[in-house]
Image (cartoon, rainbow, N blue to C red; front, side):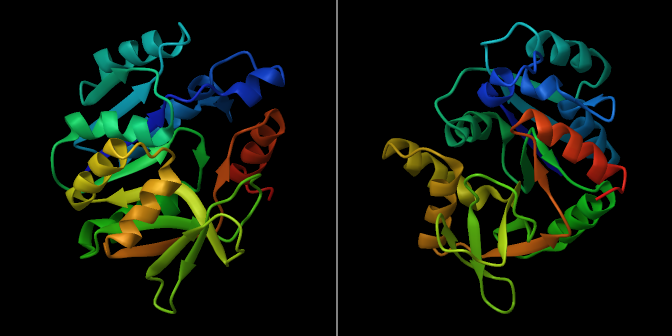
Length: 232
């Protein structure tokens, strides 16, 4: 399976709170977040790993270029984009067809759960398998409405549901015409793209994780480390 990482955000909140490294290189348990994802993807027998990062910092690009020498399956795009949806659109141009797993660079999860999720996605007949969690510690969570079989029926901003998005998206090439149309119509943000998937009646299913964290603030780093060390 192919994997992809959205790592083109500015990480402005971390920078404002005194974190000097760009978000992809922020360390959790002594490992840069982007390195952690690449390692886990390799453990899941990734065919290729596609990464987009911005050209606003001089640190992330050379770091990834060094990794490319050791791991040729890494494919790097360096481009500053206006939103995560636009970043996904850039990745879409080079990924080819087939199933893939797309994540944000700062999503923190248990490795065993992720591997089980990938195994479930590999055999799924759905158009998409979205990782969700009932742990809500986000300023602007994307709520996910489902039926009793965990089929996704809506993506919501302000109507609380059991689950929120975990920033991990299992998708197939059936989504590509939709992301293309979203770009043509001037939409932005991944959540609006996901809403369009539902409007176009793609079959999406939710896959619950026990807990998924995002690292948006400096104190989130300690939360993530405690979580991975089994202290939370």
